Length: 231
Image (tube, rainbow, N blue to C red; front, side, top):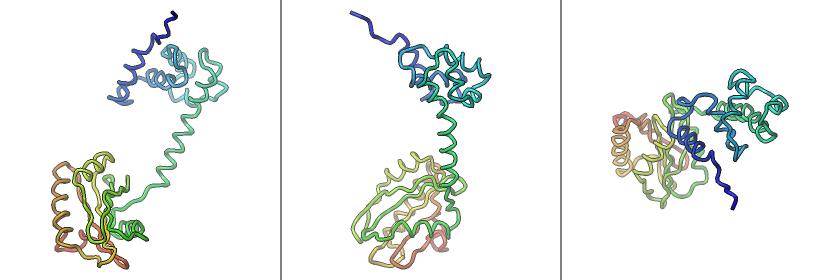
């Protein structure tokens, strides 16, 4: 019976594991290119081809700057590999452009209020959102954490922490609504805010504010002097 086992499988597994655990900082250029080529050359040693590409064009960035036709001229590079490599700069540009266009800064209460009020348009049940921000107040992600009756919403502390960690948040903003009430904190709202502020602070994440939204108004607890000590 013909042996169909890939002789390079263990090497490929080691390269993938290095990237997964250490990232690009711990990998030389040829290994990064070798790893990329795994996905267009499934059963052949890509190490030699990666070295050949860098030798031909002079550096990793020049490999990515090469045209599809130029890449095809390198021994071992077929149409799939040439297409994959030539896609990388275009995809990176789309990613960077998208990040720049999508940047939303919520460092000021007025900016945060405007963004948050829109979250609750047409919302008839009490809903809790966690807004994850970076160190300068740019929005990383806005996540719905809980949803409940018109009178209360259950906030899972573990879900808050896991979501903040998953999004690498430096600080967070809470936002929830009172669909049939007024924009004023209940005793439970204040207790939860104080508890979560302490819990988040203990793991290096700052609770920056807690907004409460009602039909025609909203408030920022951090902007109210008697509540500001919680933030």
